[in-house]
Image (cartoon, rainbow, N blue to C red):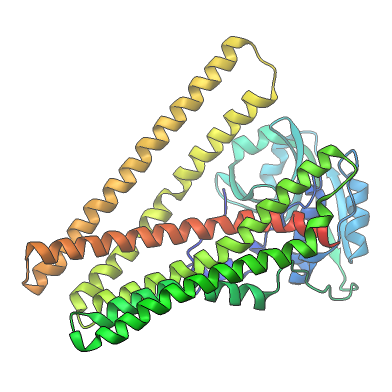
Amino acid sequence: MKSRAFFVPFLLRQKQLYSVRNIIVYQAQNKSCGYAVVKMALIHVSKRRDFIYALEEKVEGQAPSFAELIRYGAKFGLRLGGYKVQDPREILTNKDFPLLVSVYENGFSHMLYLYKAKRKSFLVLDPKNGKREIEKADFIKIFDGRFLKVEEYNDIYPKIKPIHPISALSLSFHSLLNSLPSISLLLSIFSMNGQKENFILSLLLLLSSFLFLLLSKLETSLFIKRFDSLYLNKVDDNSLFKRRENYMHYNKYKSMAFVIYPTLILNILEILLTLFIFSFGDPYFFFSLVSSILFSLLLYFLFVSKEDSFNEKASSLEYSYFHFNKSEKNRLLELHSLSKVGKRYSVYLTIKDSASIIFACLASFFALYFKNDLGMELFFFTFISNYLMIGLIKQSLTNYDKLDEKKKEESYFIFNFLS
């Protein structure tokens, strides 16, 4: 299951977000999942985050063998032992974690970092798909009996300097500048607040919003131009396949790097400003908006496993349809199964959206009821504000989830364009 969390780490799952046991290292190359799980073992055993940037061996042809992975770990002070069980069910009695396990899934060999056993499932970190929870019965079907186990760790390797394609300072400045237009616009609305004496201030803030918008577009254009001047030439390769792959990953990382963080920061600022501006001096309205925030979070965490289930089912069917030769009858069955999954997902989204509308109505009604002011115009305004807040939280969570994709692309980018 993909790892997900809200964007305010001190409120929700703080320990999980900052614990090294939940750091996922994504594979930087095709067939390099083995190196990624070894780096996860290094991070979790040593408590050193800098092993994220440990340079991998280049994979050409076959995936690295267990012997190569053991040598790779030893270079950084990690002693791994290789084991094989005849019956995959023996893994169910294991009490010693973590394990670096080999599985055969979707027609390919793959490595997973298995770090915890629950009553009916295993928790794993997947260097390709992120955090997952796999039912034990399903895990037995894919486990091929081979695994690596941490025997010993010695802190012998010097600290590794972090590698970032874009500096934190540049990204922070870019994010802030892209947030200023919306901040100025919201402050303009707040300063007006029905008072004519604030008209000039409101107008100046509105004009500054347009100015910041132009500046942010100019800054983004210059930022991208500088980024291309540094890295674009590295996309080229003698291999046609490698050129296509590099170009795809290059553009994917660039779009995520320049959009996700600024958008996420903007979402957070919009939520805080909306909460302040629309509930200023009105505690009933404030608690109404806070209840919408809590409802959005509750809805998210209640249904996150359901959404993951839809995505995994669709991905599995798509992979099977596009990668395996089957009879026409079986192919059509898979196509119809995909269509059914899509329809069920559409119904699921409709239910979620309907629940949001109903809750916004109820939150608005009770806020005005306790305030003893049940006017139709005020109810409509309160409903719109609550529904807007639910939408902002939903968008923020969606952008936060996309950070996993950015991390994947960053791993590829660092290995192929910076190492």
